Image (cartoon, rainbow, N blue to C red; front, side, top):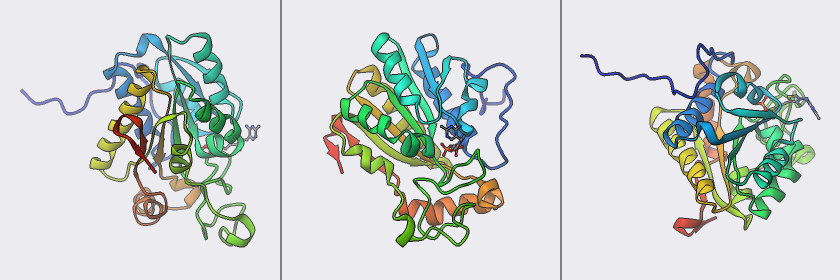
Length: 252
Ligand SMILES: Cc1ncc(C[n+]2csc(CCOP(=O)(O)OP(=O)(O)O)c2C)c(N)n1
């Protein structure tokens, strides 16, 4: 009998079809989140706060109770839900513009307060859904629709290294950055998401995973070239790793 190598996570909505652009990593990231929810048996007890941007579609794919937040406010909603229903497993799934720009105040103060929620943030170095504008993670020199000659250091300053910044917040139990550029890295990404989720279940504090993602459409690249860029350019600036793990006494 043939070995089964592919199984759709039980928690995915029947008949779903990802609507992301070819080569976008949102689908891979959502699938990993789904696998972790399945493996931790969280389907009946989870509330997801979805963001505005390409991440919003999570409610079309993962079968858990989901509330949609205005742009940047997913963490604020998740905070309210978790405080009202502390027994629920509560997570957000957000873009970098949502989490680290328009929602930065909510995100950082929730991290400082040690809200017992988990946040997944997709770093694709631009505002994807609205056409690839410069965002908080746009790299120096990167051409976007609002920085047509490249991100100019003098004018725009530096991109934010989100996982490192959040590791510095005392209320954070776990902060890591992962990449989806290769199969081994996808496995590491899943392990980080699972650990983040487990830390919430253990009540240890705010847990965070930044996921580096390609955005071929807005980068004007083929999927292959976009993944080469993740590996050759992004991972040099946004270095994958665990930046805080309170159970391992690890901190940047
Ligand atoms: C208050 C508010 N400002 C701006 C927008 C427009 N808007 C919708 S999606 C989006 C970009 C989202 O980018 P990001 O959070 O990085 O996620 P991505 O789409 O790249 O996954 C913006 C600016 C909005 N919907 N609401």
